[in-house]
Image (cartoon, rainbow, N blue to C red):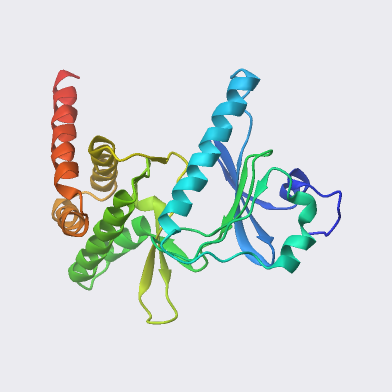
Length: 264
C-alpha cells in the first residue's frame, strides 16, 4: 500500500485482489498494516433510492462489525500500534479502528470505513471450510466418525456461546465456518465468518431460527448426517445457559417448516 496522503479506500481497493462479488458486497484480498487482510465492500444498490440505500448499507455494516466484536469481546482490548495509525491517518475520517483478542473465534476487525462501507478484517490463513472438511472426511477410506462427532460438538459449543452473547448470525452454514490449524497444539481452531446478515437479539425465537437455518443447510449439504447434527444440538444444549427456550423454539420452527412443505 503506497503511503500517500491522497490515497483513499477506493484507490486502495483498486490495487487489491478481487476474490468474489455477491449481490450485497465485493470481497478483496490485500495487505493492510502489514497483515494479510480480507476487505468487504458494500457497494451502492442502484435499484434503491440513494438515501434509503445509504441508510440500509450503513446499518448492515454497523451490525456486522458489532456482531463480530461482541463475539470477540471476551478477550482484552489491544490497540493497533500508534506508529501504524499515524502512517494511515489520512484514512481515519469516518473510520473506526478496532482490535480485540479472541473470545468466540471470529476474524479480527482491523479497520472500518463508514464512508465507503468497507470492513478490513483478518484473513484466516491456512484454513479450510467445515463444509470441505466434512465432505473429505466422509469420502475418506479411513473411519473418521469420532473426529466428525468431536467437530460437531465443538460447533455446538461455539454456537451456544455466540447465542448466549445474543448474536444472531443469520447465515449459518458449514461454508461460513473455518478450520484453522493451531501451531500450539496441532488441533484446528473453529472460526465463524461472514456476519453480513447478523444482528443482536435476545429472543429465543431468533436463536431457534438461526439453528433451523443451519440444520437445513447442514442436512442438504451433507446428506445422511442427522446423527451428527443431533450431536451438535446436544453440545449446544449442554453449553448454553438459555438452551431450553431456544430448543423449544427450534422445534416450533421445524413444525412450521413441515406445515409449509405440506401446503406447498
